[in-house]
Each structure stands twice: as structure tokens, then as C-alpha cells.
Image (cartoon, rainbow, N blue to C red; front, side):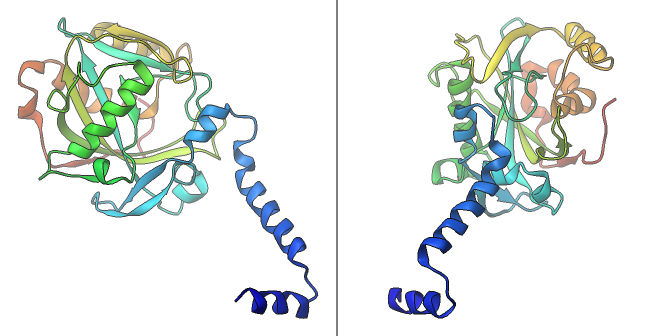
Length: 265
């Protein structure tokens, strides 16, 4: 095979070194969208996310970078994600402000933790609709971003409530990056110790519903940045969950709430 390849190259007057240089140039161009970003965040773009169809059936996998490019999102690429809403014993919701180092939605306030299960056996596992794989992914990222020990917040503590389908272009600098996800909503009420990772999280705080409403209002005038998925969930679903944390599982459903195409309100 190697001899045939060499003969083909010679017959077409192309040297192997020239071809290697062309391939390296192509690869470099493909990665040029990541130039200038934080090295740690760029390395995370190599994670393998779970590709799905509109019914949340697994269709394959792709790099995190590939999943978040608008050129692929505009062709329909869709991946699985999760959003954790962690409340303390006083019923206050833990928010995080995304680090300025983040490639998508830097500096935006959002729910406790938002990320992706990876295309691995442990995080693909469904366990009869209990989303155990997604819960494991949530534990992994809660520890990575906020230093929350999995022993303090078990998979049993994380209640799977519903799923949300949304699409949003990045801010600032739309056009290159975006999100197109079916987002698993996980809710927990537990007091935990926090040690934020500054590369992931700029700041964090606990808020009550009134304080969060004030933040949402300020975001309408640009005084504060809120992620689009968090805004949609707040506007459509969050308050009814917040008012019944002691009986949250009664809100569980098998619906995929479709919020694609809905702008900020």
C-alpha cells in the first residue's frame, strides 16, 4: 500500500513532503478558529460530545469544537447537554458567572453548572430513563468547575426533571460559535462546600427569586449578561420548580420542551 501511494505521488509529480505540508496547512486552518483563546479552554474543545436527533436518540459523537461551530449547527448538528440547578437548604439558587476565559458566553451569569455528558460508556448509560450517565457527567463538572465533592452531592441527590431543546448564537462575537442542545435539567437541594475553578468560574452567588428577577431585568439593558438557555428556563419553567423543591419529582416529565427560535424576553 505504501509503495502504491509513493508511485501515485510520483506519477502525479507530487512529493510526499508536499502532501504532508498541505495536510498540515488544512488542519491548521481548521483549528484557526481557536487562535487567541485560553489554552486550557482550547484543550477542552477536544472532548467527545454525544450527537443526537430531535428525539434525543444517540446518532454518534463529535468533538466539542465541532458541535459548537455555527456552520455545523446551521446544518442541524445537535448534541446532548445538562443544566444543574443547585439550591441550598434555605431555598436559594447557586449561580455562577462564567469565566472570561470561556470560548462561549464569557462573563455571563447562568445556573449552577452547564456542560455536556461525554461519549463514554459511563456517561451514555440511561438506566431505564433515570439519566444516570448525565448525572455522572454533572458530578464530574460540578467538581471541575466549583470543587463540589461527589460525596457531598450524589447522583441520587440530582433529580432529573425534564429536557429543553434550544439554539443560540454566541455572545459576544456571534457567527462562529453557538449552542444547539437538548438540555437535561437536574435539580438538587443540598448544602455543599464550594471551591471555584477560576478558569471556569469568575464568581458565584446564591440568590432568591426576587434577586434573580432583578438580574434578568438588568440584563435587558445590558447591565448584566445572562446566558440564553438560563433566561429561557427562567421565563418558562424555573419558578414553578423553585416553589416546590420539597416535591420536585412531581414535575418530572418525558417532554422535550422546544424553545428553538425564541429570542430574549
